Amino acid sequence: RRAVALAACAVRSPVAGEIDAADLPALLARVTLRTEENHAARAHG
Image 1 (cartoon, rainbow, N blue to C red):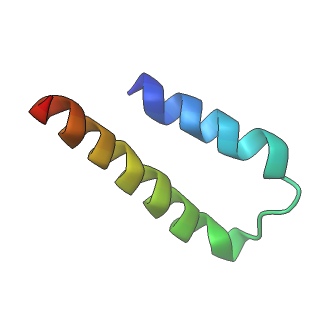
Image 2: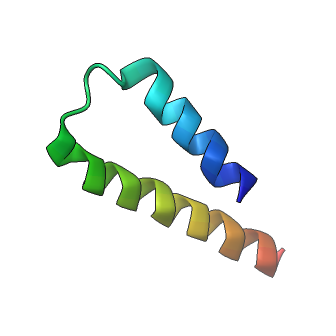
């Protein structure tokens, strides 16, 4: 959960002015996918 918040902060801060509303779903999906991959990798150790 913390990783998601950190990712959201990292994504939001530097590019907030450049993100179009249309890009948000894809961006969110990408962050979510990456987070799930990290969790899966960690679970398999």
